[in-house]
Image (cartoon, rainbow, N blue to C red; front, side):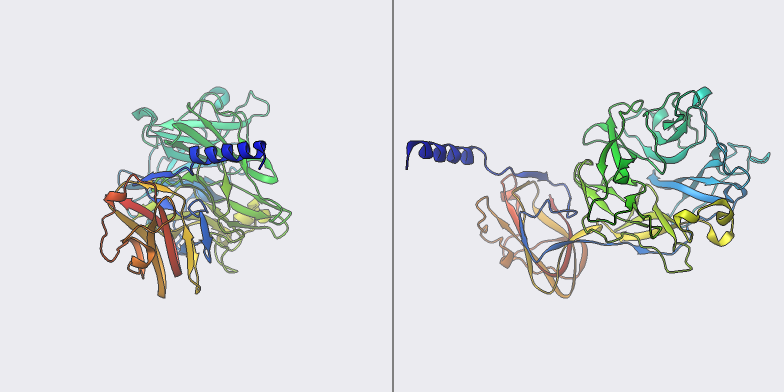
Length: 479
């Protein structure tokens, strides 16, 4: 061995000693299997998207004069034990003008039956007996309707700005006049529009906005140009101004040549660590189909399909209210061990959504509810052949390991702990683990002799998971 080769080998050895694999600090935060982040190695295990169950409920329908053209974009959230909804609708009388959109409010105590309370805030046909918040908002050049509005709670704001909203706005003195507008409210009912655009770009469809405490920034998602309709993102420490959105997600060569993304429906999933979800409608131009898909991210910037081509919410059967086009409503509700989401469906395809068709009663767009298990969007999945995966090094806090898991009658999940060298930790190997079977949103792993993991807390360990005919959705160390 010559001197140069020897020195290079010594240098690489020193680097390996100095730079061991970085352990992932997870503490006691819940971790979801939305992507391959927790697969250092795997065999006979894949990711699987779990579509929610349709209730086929007609959660909200057009049954007021100001809704007689169609319902449109909407979102839901929970606040102080009440479920709240904001939605847009059009009337035949105003369509299509800059004064055709009513921004409305509905609420519910159970998330199933929704009421449209008489608010007394806006006079429609000389009556304030309606649930309209406004049709146009703002002063001077900022006065216009809203379109594609997303309402969110801002925990960083003072009480008078606790509610925020992002939407399309029309600013009459600007060229072009359509920009992204911002609003704020103390109660979600009485709104004030910012006098200037919050972002000097514009695109159709619904925007997504939220406060991200992980980066202490407001986050804005909307449609941008890419491979056809695509999704862009911008962040700001101030709600008053965002830089133009940067492309973060689009279709690619594995999708149909004329397929693109219609709307983001993006959110941060606050019930787990580092999980961002997007529910865009995938628009196939040739077939004129719009169904809802699921994309995932760990940071809101880098997105992927966990199971390419599989819809999250499928079009309904011919003749059903949701057989033509689907859009996800912004937001979700966690109710017990379930996740509830709401989408809008119409029997009309995208290209048929004109006034003469929309006004026909059986063509009206309907909001409906879907139900998924808690944290149940995606799973690590194994079939009849036993699968195995090993996580990267993890550093946890707590005393016990809990799983969200579902198996068939003959299926199982076993989990073991490995040390930083990949060796089984005595008494806590996968073969020492009692088989977990059945359907459990939260079940502790148990070993033959010792279930207390406190002595391993703070040390880098790996999980080894053996599974058969099973779906594993999440894991969490608990105190």
